[in-house]
Length: 160
Image 1 (spheres, rainbow, N blue to C red):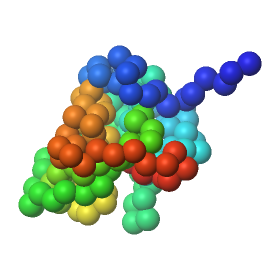
Image 2 (image 1 turned 180 degrees about the vertical axis):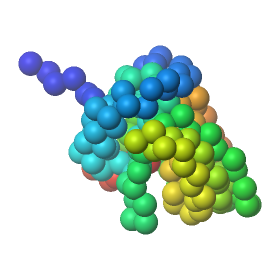
Image 3 (image 1 turned 180 degrees about the horizontal axis):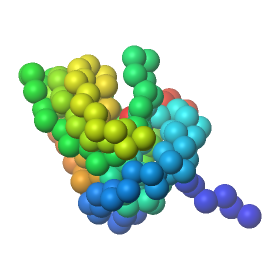
Image 4 (image 1 turned 30 degrees about the vertical axis):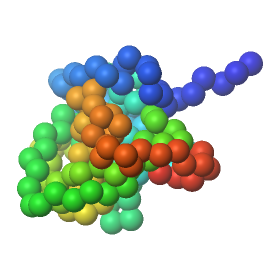
């Protein structure tokens, strides 16, 4: 029996749909736990709920300087822009340069339903932008700088 892949991959129409706002954050506990498990198993830096087939506006991340979850995130970009390498668990085996804001302010609810504001820069700013793009049905390949998208070995972790 073939095990079904938990992370949806490029071509699945659900990745192109805008996720829906969460009405009751208390209903997201199991989803957030599952998202963290899947993200860790696949060695990703972040994950959006729709990448595992759940159409709610929820993201998680885990990078060196920060980890967390955000429900109904709204981003306000700031600072300058810079190109940086990105890959994606939903586009395995590919990476490319994507221009993103160097700083963002993220507002939403934490996993306990409390309103939070996160001011992020560097890698965290990039991850938050990448994951919120997923919630809007946008993939990194839609933003990749022309001529930089290239295959990478599947065992090389490039997923945000």
